[in-house]
Length: 501
Image (tube, rainbow, N blue to C red; front, side):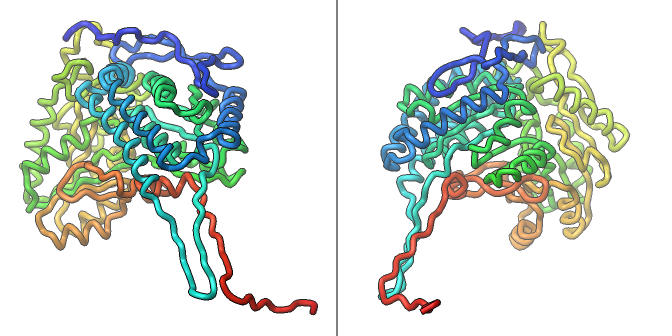
């Protein structure tokens, strides 16, 4: 496939969606949106400012206070959520094409995103219907029960990697809980977010429950975080941005859920299933172009199998198909944006003085016609990387991996925990005791034993250290978007000290 594929009826201008209407920025501000395989602008988007966030929050507040959604029965809300899921699946082909065009993700990997997004809505529809809350009784004395109430307007700030699916992670539980929302999608990838408005309208979601403001983080995102009538912020993105958001939320004591960066270790012991570990550790860092927070971007390999592992891994990395994201044969596409491409390439250069390059190390050769200026990076493998190296310590967020040897279990644990991050860890061993003990001791919010990232939606998702604050997933998401009010009723005589009698 040589000519650059462009989806049909591609919008040339993306608007906000506020109170059930598509609108431009009040002041007329816009920003350019580019596609990463030609790095040329294909559209403009309305650039939200404080005034636009104010309008969106006002619409969301009105829908929360006076609209039907927060007080509807869980079953009635669930019916709408199921219609949303069906509408998402109906858009699967269109969504995959738009996502690939906007992000540079390979089309085969973009295709699964609609199904996963739909599943989030179905899952939380089932959860709110099945939800039960605590009732506690002391016979003859007291009865206590919990009222669960949606908190209000939720501010959702989402990243540019798999944007549509990650938006659904926040939209599904917040809306299911009865909150109204203002979504600020990432400025690099606003295209697929524009589909939500029509999907929600057709499913019967009342106007004002969902609002979308496009814009730059420092403008629209900042205004949303600081808005006094937004009691909750859910953010997925970079750790340094998370720190800034945390500081800005303190002023109004906002609820915060943050899933941040990662530098996750994959630890391969000598007794591991070698072929399975090779397959999984390759997929874990090179799928989604390496632009994934849970990427196993540090591989720690026990010394008896280290040379064999490095040789096999490098050979496979060199054979990965890099090219046009719309070609079904492509395994690694174009990085999302020139800014991000420059960052990743700067780490590739740093790595050349910190490790030995055994695959990649620059731009791939033989790029498709017309895509020579695209943001392409060849899958890059550094080996013999020291633990204090920048490519061992810092999140690169691209198709770049550092491989380091270890001798003992204790050394493996020390290396695994030796970064500021703690999102995921992947452990490869057939020793059951070692696997469970290592999982217990590794500093990571999520651990996969003999597997890559395959997640049950009921389980908690989140990180420790610089990788996040709080957990989402299952009931923990519902807990974040709701207040749990305790009601106490006395069933017997009340014995109160008689002050002043």
